[in-house]
Length: 165
Image (cartoon, rainbow, N blue to C red; front, side, top):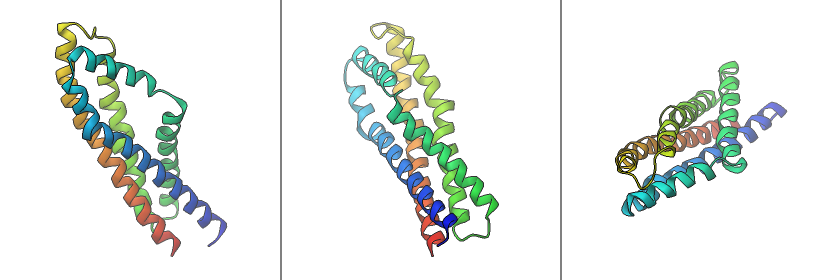
């Protein structure tokens, strides 16, 4: 393998790992965290999720979440510029799956829901109404993000294997 192929292999590996990490975080929320928060009193669930939504804005999570999106963009550009390279279609698919299925969904759906939850009083009737809707809608979009990140990881792994041949 040449230097460029080695670099693309490493970038693809790092990107696939980032997709897997993010898929795992989102999977945890869809498969058990939101259910657990929905079982407690609405005020406690709201306060817990409000806290999670503040704490998640940290260099480690954002570094992986945004770093993976940036690496996906690099792989998308590489795949378009090197379309005849084996695995390029898979790299393109993986990059687009993560970008649209995870990053764009987060910004378009989950973040606005988080922002709406952030301003309610957990102990209020309005808070309880927002929370009921939030639990269902946020979890649906989170599951979309989970599937997007997992599918992206799979596509990137296939692309990496094809590119390494």
